[in-house]
Length: 398
Image (cartoon, rainbow, N blue to C red):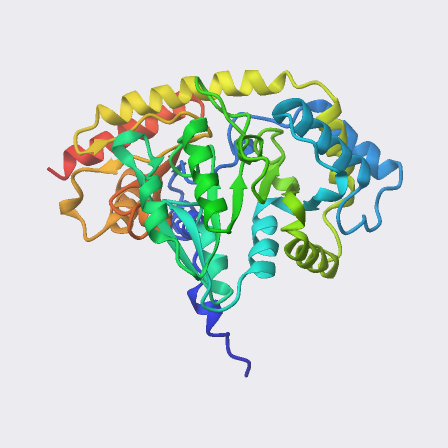
């Protein structure tokens, strides 16, 4: 009988791992308030009508076969035009590859760039697949500190200390998942400069770039045009199409320094055939069409984020910094002494308060421990009920 591989035994995805016990409770008829997954469509957001119509039209117009492995040129041209408009960057469409969501972008890139024993620097805490896929490739994710007392800003000196001869890349996630932090231009520039000084590439994950509240999002490549930077981005969040799985990589290929890694990336992209054809055609319409859903969405999200921040800090035993973007909040469990760890806390909340959160250690064993992540996507009434349940739970364990 075939046995599972050794490397598969280390695969664990915290965000969906907690769904398994929640589903068992639902099978018993218990209503669970889910604050675990960053899917706007699961709440009261919807894909803009013109994007849905473009998807249907693409199918009717015959775009039902394989697309080019790097993606339709028209879509890559529109992405390049967005980069020019938004960030002042001049990219050739051939600098861009369309992927099946940003998760596939990072899977392809890490598979193309990592050998056993290599290291990449990732923010602590970080989006879990950076840790998972790095280890799957026999390499090691090294978490650099982000400072909770400074709204989870990167500790630049810690980055310097953790670079070794095995470091292949520095990952920046801005706006950040899971903390909601948005980084100032000075910090981004410092991080890019450190990478350049040490001759390592920068991976800049900017999937939440247009979901910022009062601060401004700066694209990393726009502040460091002379540094080799691979930008990860996509449509899932800003254009409200998470299930369509549309992402892309952009190579800021300074002096040809990314030629070899770009070639490896594209060879893997060809081996997996292509990203979804009709969804790609719809994304052309998304970029060319009305953008008014974005400020409406961001305005709604800011109110919900502000409420979550205020309400969580009113609960004894919980404290939180204020998110500046995305749709997450990453509170600290001040009263953690009552539990073995943050995962036990999250499961206890699930079974007793029927609110589904994600344990912070799933985002970083070191910098995420004794925290949890909640999404701030739900309508205000649902957030209020969830936090009321959490508060009653915390009172009950005193």
